Structures are given as structure tokens and as C-alpha cells.
Length: 78
Image (cartoon, rainbow, N blue to C red; front, top):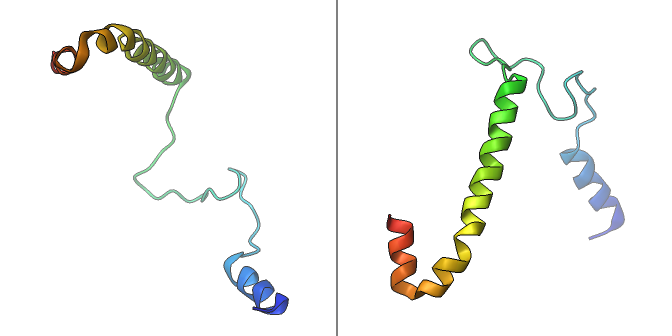
């Protein structure tokens, strides 16, 4: 492929449209049924859930490793 055809392919893929105020690649018209309503408390709960979930997942790694295959299966079933 020549350099000219690559440039044509790239220009066909990339569209030079002005960016919206929401940021690049985010449509400003979300439709009648969609709204952005995440409040600070929602973000805080998602963060706390992620931290607790990661802690539980990593905290059980040692005992499950020492328990062997049967202990591993029982640990995740229960």
C-alpha cells in the first residue's frame, strides 16, 4: 500500500466534527429516556464497594491457596 492510500483510509475513518461541551466522543443528545444523575454519594458508594470487594477477594487468596482444590471450591461455593 502506498502512503497516499493509507492517508485516504485514515481520513475516511476520522471525521472532523466539532467536539461537544461534554467531551470528545460523547453525544450531547442522549435521548428522552437517558439522564446523568450520579451524585457524589453514588460515586462514594461505588468506590467503597470496589475497595471492600477487592479487600475480600485478595484477603481470601492465602487461606484458599492453603486449603487446596477442595477448600478452594468450598470457599467460593459458600
